Image (cartoon, rainbow, N blue to C red; front, side, top):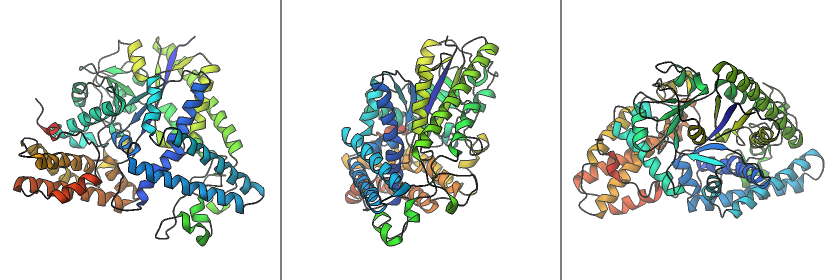
Length: 529
């Protein structure tokens, strides 16, 4: 008998990276890697489940920047070329490694990338349409996020800026999927007191936050994170379950660290002879990851040179074992919670989608096995969408969540510290200026275009990814450059609009480069009533 629920939630997000002004920008490969290693493998899993008659249920957020990039003809064309180069590399590897385990692995990659190519061509390069079919069949519930993944608590002094992040996201989602979203993955799961009112006003029914956002709510929720709470606005709040998250996320005890799994940090782009690999690395001759990896983790803390060769057969077997263990643990967890709660609990397990496949290569196999084992091998819990759960369980405790995020120490420190604090005075000033621009009535089409582009530039500058990257210490120059360039373009637009000196040629170039949100209306920044 089913006595509880498991909600698997995947957060699919990448910052908006699109550089038509350059033939090659390394950061565009973030998207290409995610397509090859996460999004297409997930689609392959979903297709297999449907073909086998398994009525699976997964909630997945797709952020507006990701939807925009996946739908963009230029990036689709560039990914096609990227995949062709990758296929050429592994075919060459198969030919030069003419015996032994390396030939076996090269052949594995030849087949793997051929399957990626097959799915890519099946959907004519538009993966948004591919995912939408599973929304239409009610297997996948896709929810939204902030327009550019802006860190909302650090914008709250300008409510119109928060509103714009929410409203633009909802409108963009509806244009992509033909229906409004039910819920939202708050960027970085970051919540501040009162945010639920704006969430309700844009028509959203629920959002996700970290577990302590629920646990420290007022009054303290009776069922902890194992039931949602309703805010006074009627918006529901789901909290992350720590136990199930640790089993997957933890670098110490999580599944992805198993010795048989593929080693992320040992890549052919760094290992192969330079002249041999040169056609497959950066145009300037710098080495980079290719996505072709021949080694397994082997042991924690081991030098990369000591890593042993990877075997996808044994890795797949281990993924099945880990899926069984995860399902078993959820059964025991649900049984215990049902006993102490006296009602059916829901275990909410949210993860970055890119963990599955990109960082943890075997992750899509894990999801496949987890769904199959949950469907066939047990009846203690059922997997559910968050919206379906709310429809079936409409009565919940009313409480106010606590300010929180899922970042370091559970609050805002990772996005506001000595590495990135410099951005916020500029972002706040730009928000103030955008609000003032929102009162203007354009005198002609050129001014209207400039006002709308100013809104785009502010949203792009607000992406939490830039502050996050500055804190991690990786790709910092790019994050700084993106922040400064969007702020610079915004400020030039602000000055030109007020002076009546808009350069139509320059504006056209900026519109071409930063073409996200084609239907945006700058009036979204007008003060809230």
